[in-house]
Amino acid sequence: MSNFISEKAKLGKNITLNKNIIIEEDVTIGDNCRIGYNVVIREGTIIGDNVRIDDNTVIGKYPMRASLSIFKEEQLFILVLIFQIMF
Image (cartoon, rainbow, N blue to C red; front, top):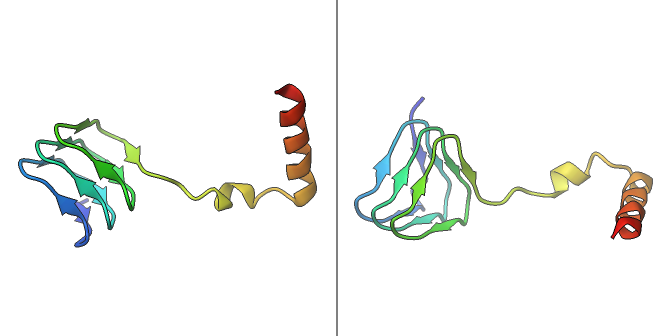
């Protein structure tokens, strides 16, 4: 598998990129960084200078809608009540 780097990503100087990397759009990576194998950097992420990202890492946000959509409204209400009672 090869790397995918969005044309809208901004990469600094002296960056080491290993294999199987996905860098989505609007990502900024500073100078002197090392990106390990099998890394995904999600849209909108900003990484500073001198950062090492280890292998098999995903950085960035995930949409919450997908995980909540499996609950019916009544189930979600019960979960909220349990949370309020516990805390």
